[in-house]
Image (cartoon, rainbow, N blue to C red):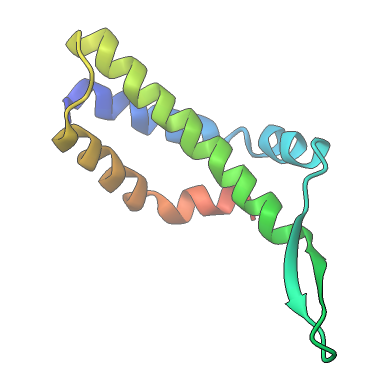
Length: 107
């Protein structure tokens, strides 16, 4: 990955970390909850509400989407082209390097 793009993404990760409250408010304001299918003893099925799982996943989606958008935009702006498969793999590696930090934002 281009050094300048990596630096911009590192900054974007840190900026996103400081937006924890905004992201949490966005997720909660939409009122989404996950409904998990469970089977009862009589064989019937119903859905059980599991709010934390879906909200956390939705928050991760916001974060990854924000970072992916920045990665793609900066590649086009700086390199004047779409990112290659190799650069995309390096982007994934960067996300994995910051996985713990990014998980803290939505926990």
